Structure formats: structure tokens, C-alpha cells
Length: 332
Image (cartoon, helix red, strand yellow):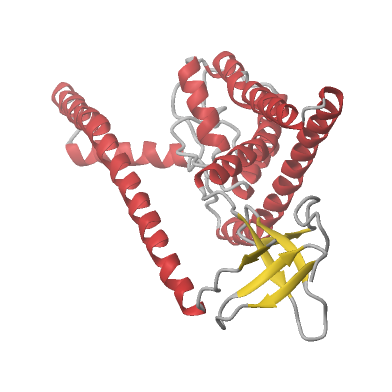
């Protein structure tokens, strides 16, 4: 049996095919940002106006009750309190420092730097520390990506090993892959997103929703800084607390990166399988099946059994110059 090959598309048509897809992707991206802008504006704008008005009322009430304190002096006091908080000093009660730049606090700052979380509640103030932070992040961020990639690869290998074991036992590879992937997703949700908030509820006094919000914002490296562990001066934190949270951040980011990669693979266009035939004037004509990988590169595969069951593949010239015929079979 012979089948005609469709003529190859001219090379100058490839860019024209890619441009509409890119434009649609950019439009979808801008539409998603517009959606977030509208929702946050509707939800947060009234609360921000109420907070500002309440602060101004309390400020003027304080000035009316204490006539010896004028407005500029109060503004100077407020600026000093804000600067003290940013420097890691707490002026509530008898507590003047949270020990942020002690050994444990410095380690947590190093972790938040190389993981690009950047809570914003703590930053170096000396020029020497700022210069060192630049070079430390310059080397530490790529190193952190390598570590996360290796940890994610090990997690993926574990999932594939479980899938192969279950597939060999059940004689159903598809069902085994689905079960192994679901198990990895659920176990990761428990270990990195559902159970850690219970620890934060106990140690920080937050609600579970607030703790879950902090967990996701941290592992996704957004790091707004509105919720940060170890910031309550009325609480005593054990030494193991921040070290344990640092390890949770490292492994949790690797797991969440796998989940985001899975979501990206689902959003992208699925790879299409097609047949390519390669031949040259010095080599025999060979059929070869190619499959588009998730990364967008073509991966060669050996011909599957049953593709040309009757014999080798031959090539015949069609009367039209742009069309060739590939034949499977033993006959001439």
C-alpha cells in the first residue's frame, strides 16, 4: 500500500503561525492581570481608606488629649517607631530587640535571600553587609535553583519508581501513573501546605486561614511580609523553630515547583505526533517517528511494530514534483 506525502510547508510560513499564538498569550496574560487588578481594587480599597481614616482620627485625638505634644513631634515619633521596627527593634514594653541578627535570625535571613522570598521585614543597614548581600545573592540564587532542581528530580524519580512498581503489579501502567501522581500530590499537600499551618497556629497565635495563607505565600516566593514568623515580642520561640521552618521552605519549594510545572504542562498545547522520513543520496530511506516533547523539541522514536508490517519502506516519485509516495510492502 502506498500513501502520498503531503508537501512540506514553506519555511517562511513558520513565523506567521507563531505570531498569533504569542499575541493571544499576551492578551490572556494582560486580561488575567486586569482581573486581579479589579478584584484587589474592589476588595482592598475600602479597607485601606477606612484604615487611613481611623489612623488620622486616633492621631488627632491623641493631639487633643495631650496638648503639650504638637503635630511635627508626633510625626517624628511615628517615623522613629517605623524605622526601629524595620531595624528589628521592638519598642513595646521592655522588649527592645527580637534578636533578628543573632545566629538563628541571620540563618533565616540567608534562607529568605537565596530563595528570593524577601519578606521585607529585615534588611542589612551597614554598607559592608549590603555589598556582601549582593555577592551572596548572586551566587546563592543559582545555587538554590540547582538544589531545588535536584530535589525535584529526586521527588519525580520516586514517583516514577512507585508508578513502575504499581504498573508491574497491576499490569496497568496508566492507572499506576495516575495513582502515583495523585499520591504525590496529596502527600505534598499534607506535608507542605495542610499540616505546617497547625504549627504556625500554635507558635504564632494565627488562625488556620492566616497560617495557610502564610505557607502558600512563602513557598511560592511571593513573600509580602505581612505575616512573618518569630515577630511577636510577647512570645518565646525555641531555637529549633526557625531552623525547621527553613528546611520546610527548601523542600516545600521543590514540591511546589513540580506542581507548577505540571500546571504549565497542562496549560501548554499538547505535543502532536507525526511521521518524518529522512533520506539522503548516500543513505537508504529510513522511516522514523518523531514526537514533540513538553519542552518543544522533537524526540526521535523507533518505528513501532505494525507500522509497515509487510516489509521495508520504499520511496516512489509522484508525477507532481512536490509530492512523494512512501510505500510499505515487499512488492515492487
